[in-house]
Amino acid sequence: MHVLALYNLKGGVGKTAASVNLAHLASQSGIPTLLWDLDPQGASSWYFGKESGLEGKTKGLIRGKSPLAEFIQPTPFENLDIIPANLDNHTIEHWLNKSEKPHKQLKRLIKPLHEDYSLLIFDCPPGYSLLAENILHAADIIACPIIPTYLSIRTYAQIVAHQAKSKIRDIKLYPFLSMVDRRKKLHRELVDDLPQMIKTLLPISIPYASAVEQMGENQLPVTAFAASSPAGMAYQALWKELSLKLGL
Ligand SMILES: Nc1ncnc2c1ncn2[C@@H]1O[C@H](COP(=O)(O)OP(=O)(O)OP(=O)(O)O)[C@@H](O)[C@H]1O
Ligand SMILES: [Mg+2]
Image (cartoon, rainbow, N blue to C red; front, side, top):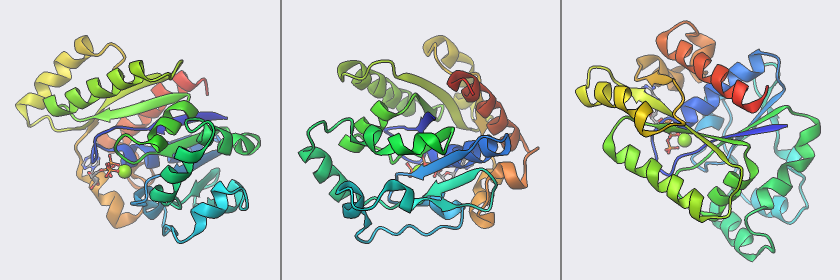
């Protein structure tokens, strides 16, 4: 099983939109895929018509009483299952802090999934936390959406610096441009300049598009209801790049 995380320290940059569309595209190409909504906001759960159920479930999972498989639910799409947002982050952080190997618990938890899925996608909450450290340890690839603004680029530099400081080896961090609005001069300039500044930047720009906003109205991935729109095509190009990096 390959593990892909959509992560950024920064909020509202398109992590969930990318997670949902990439999970849908992977499943469409016949890959048994599981999307795990690790954000208590439960946005990716909601896009697939699932309500998050935070009440009291986290304790069962971390105490080993409820296996992770119990949290898995089907989606309307073949080859695509979801773990809706079940984690109460306060309980999780507390548990991780008390664990013997606090950075590796998520990696341990997902081991039994290896038999049933070829791809696991984490939709991550924004911010640094012990849970975020666990995600960085558990993922083979971290895809990081960045909006072309100086503040976003600064945040990306902070992630790179943090990763270099922490003992996370072999992590592959791939940023890609998100919510690109070509009507904005700064966006156009940074789209041109960023490949020189960030060598690992994927050659993909997800455009700022109303089709992505309509995901909320439709409760569906763009790639399901507007596959040939510019945003739908951009997510397909992103999936192509990432599936190659993952070796899928
Ligand atoms: N390419 C896009 N074009 C237009 N709107 C977008 C695009 N991508 C995301 N959005 C909108 O921006 C908002 C934030 O997107 P999203 O939830 O994917 O970001 P996020 O990084 O997961 O946020 P959070 O950090 O809160 O989890 C949503 O309302 C979404 O519909
Ligand atoms: Mg999100």
